[in-house]
Image (cartoon, rainbow, N blue to C red):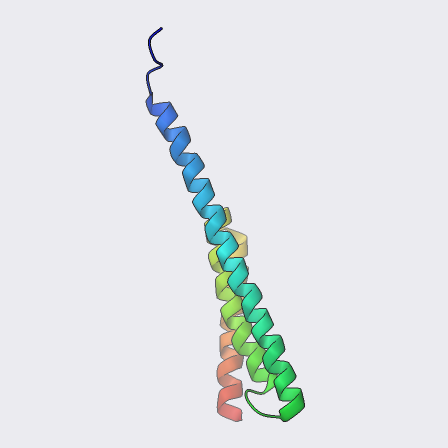
Length: 107
């Protein structure tokens, strides 16, 4: 028997599987970063309650939500290839950035 010839379809299928694996890994990494940002917010919030030092909770929330919204927009692009979720997360990031700037200038 002759060995089966590799066709362009086989190469495409293999490439698509590799791309799906990379996309899943990137999305997982971004979600892990979001989890660490949430943990950072909790730790800094607890420090603020105990010592009243550091960033005020409102400023911290606006700042972290702006960053988290941008990361969620990136996840939406990587996983779903843009779409309505991208617009929602970018709009939320804009609102949170404006709130962050407002809170920085008022306090």
